[in-house]
Length: 204
Image (cartoon, rainbow, N blue to C red):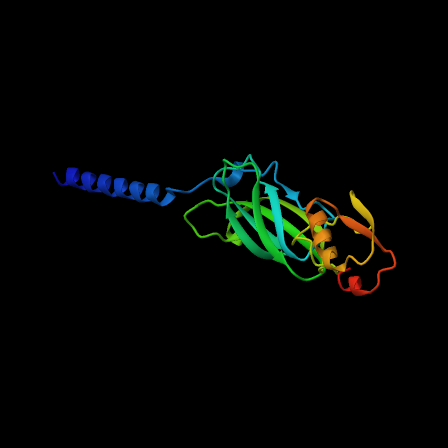
């Protein structure tokens, strides 16, 4: 009789251990097959020149990764932001501030978290993809009217420029420039035609 009791106790112990093991693995994900194919930075482009201020970034996450993937933004190797990946979106946008006039290396790292209930920590997760672009940031121009993060590309080459001649138009000059900046003009070649004062130099 005692043998049957012993076997029953052993079976109960084994079942209990199995249950604990299953509960311990609950929520765990195998990251070995995850990949970040398709991960790329859409904006800004490599070599872009932006005006200091709020810079908008747009990137496409690797669509082959599982819902356990996470995305991190690093600037010059320093962790700046974290985003949970949304499988329903083909691109993700975020805004960050870059105030200093210098070159920056923007890096997006995609990882796989074995357990999504754990807090995000890039060092504890499997890195499955990484893309980078190098950009330059300039200070405000003399007019200071371009929107933050305006794409300047190459400061010496412009897609659309305006050429105009003015005379004693100082009260309206700033508004005129701002209007055409919003219309897509990237650069101005303005010529003063014998204005009675030099007040326009405060605007230009």
